[in-house]
Image (spheres, rainbow, N blue to C red):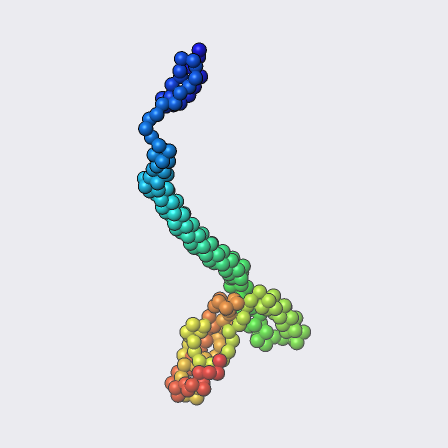
Length: 217
């Protein structure tokens, strides 16, 4: 007869001659069996293993959180750098468009100068010639003005080395010292940038300028 029983069951019993299975008495009671089962459940090494898994899992969460904070801070810093670069590039582009006409403006300034000299000179051609030249001058000046040109043409103001170029001295005791006595050639700004300083004659030998004189400009 073929033995189809589980080997573990055969260890705790046997088959009789007539084929019936007889359990052998191992001397263990039901309480002993339950105690053995409980030992496996209460094994402190199993609890330690579970606790270690929880600690490891908690450590991973903290590490991932720190990594997330680091990446977020790095992203914000890169975003700020990009925004600053964008603003700087935009400003440089605006400045380029605003001041790209600087060279051509400088070349046209002598034309303005010659117009002014022609208008100031006495001619025998009469008033009609003067009106024609004056019309052309105004037309050219208006074009330059619309593109940001502003003249420096004040007289009687304090000499300012940042916008004036002194080419002559005028011994004049009636004017305050270091006063623009005469404008020899206009200066110009292109928007808020100096394009050409004004050539002036400066009064010297007079009284020192007062605070009220300095505020004339």
